[in-house]
Length: 80
Image (cartoon, rainbow, N blue to C red):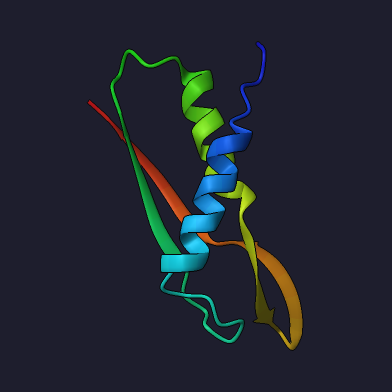
């Protein structure tokens, strides 16, 4: 199974999050929500490619007194 990477999508998602993300402060323990709606005929590797693009943007968050890089989105997806 070949992995699909959407580098341009990942870049655009990161840019949009920097402009509009609701949880950007490193002391904020909340994470922005992303829901991917997909047709059930979409190949699973394409769904994974989009989820991977969403996962690629990271931000600093203080956890246990240490600053860690965490994904900016809590992701879920829905098929129909």
